[in-house]
Image (tube, rainbow, N blue to C red):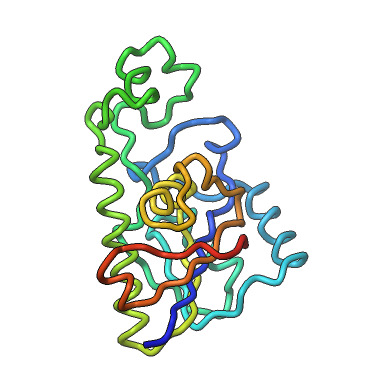
Length: 201
């Protein structure tokens, strides 16, 4: 069975990224004008991978990024790739939340779930389901190489949970319009859930 190549790319910048706000699955924010321009400049400077399919989080910032980087390709939405649900922290900055004991506990890893939001463990399970959907779709369609436009936090958590070499999620950070390339050997992946990170986009 052939090895699959998948390129995980972070969406372009939004106003919330500039302001340092926690923006998750509840806010369908577009790219900022600066973010769009940055992506266009990157596309002119970087040769993004030539792929057979483009998958994306259904949120607007990801779909816009996919349209800029792969303008001639249809976008296949994957609902499970949405960003984390930050619950009560949505739209706020770390400095605004620093006196909130729930935020302090969550940020330090003492609690797994944001108030009225999503648990880290559920987020990881959801992302793994999303990746599995992509793998199955690629195999069913005979696709050997694809790009996935995702959220920065989603890339971090997914690779932190599945990738070798093993790193903490924070070590899988990616700038806007950048990301990581992974290899998936289907038989091994279906047994173990492990992917191989082999390059930087």
